[in-house]
Image 1 (cartoon, helix red, strand yellow):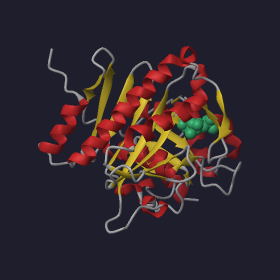
Image 2: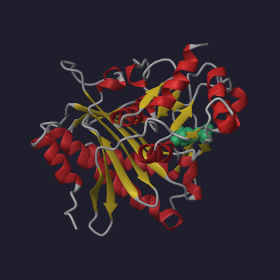
Image 3: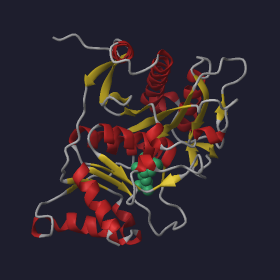
Image 4: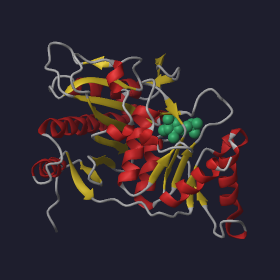
Length: 335
Ligand code: P6P
C-alpha cells in the first residue's frame, strides 16, 4: 500500500517544495487541525458527554446557541491564542473580534471561523462542521482592529472546513488546489486522502431549502422550476435534490461529486442580502469551490470580490458546478 501522507508532511512540502506557505501559516493550520480533532471528539461523544442541547445564550445573530457551539468556539480560541501566529480572531459566536492577549506574542495572521456550522443538526446526529478562513493583517497597521478583518475573500491566504460526519475530514486550500485529509483515529492524525479535487462543470443535483420557494426572487424560482420540469422541460434532463441544512455537509458533497448549492436572498427579511455570513461561511467555501474549478456568486458578482462593510455581514450564496452557477447568475442579470 502506498505510504499515506500526513497533514503535517503535506504542509511541510507546501512550505518547502512549493514555497507556498510561510512557517507561521503552516503552524496556524496545524493548530486549527488539532482544534478540529478536539471538536470532533466532543461531537462524537454526543449525549455521553452531556454536550447536546441548547445553551441558555444567544449569539450575535440572535440565534439560540447550542452547548457545542460554545465548546467549539472555546476550543478554537484556546488552541490558537498562545502560538504567536495570530493577531486576532473573529467568530460567528462572538459579537466583536478577539485580540490575542498581551501575555502572548502577536502574529501577522487573522483567523475567522464558524466554530460549529449546521448546529441545528447536532441533536439529531446529522453531519456538522467547522469552517475557517485566514487573512493577513494589513501591513503597517499598529495593533489590530475589526477594520483589519474587512478584506474581500480574494485576500484569503488559507481556507477550509472540517466535516464531522461518518468520517472526520479536513478540507483545505492554500491557493494551490483543494486537498482532503481524513482523520485516522488510531494514529490520531489527519491523512491525505484526496488531492487536486475537481468539481464537474455540470450536474443533475441541486441543493436549496424548498420550503422558502414562495419567498424567492424570480431568477431562482425560474432555475428551480426548470430543474423540477426535468427531461420534459427546458433542461432536457431530470434533477435530484438534496438539502442537509448544514452548509459544510452540502459543500462537501458538491466538492466530492458536483452539484449546486443556493441560499439566495428572499422576501422573508428583504433588508438582509441573505442568511449566510460572508466572512466565515461564504468566503472560505467560495475559495474552496473556485480552487476546485467551480464558481461562487451572490447572483450578481463573484463572492470573493465583495468588499465587506461589517464583520457579520450576510450574503446570498450560489456556488458549485460552474455551468450551473453561471446559468443562475445569468438569470439574475436578465432581470
Ligand atoms: P435553513 C446552518 O444553520 C446554516 O447556517 C447553514 O449551514 C445551512 O446551509 C443553513 O443555515 C440552513 O438554513 O434555513 O435551511 O435551516
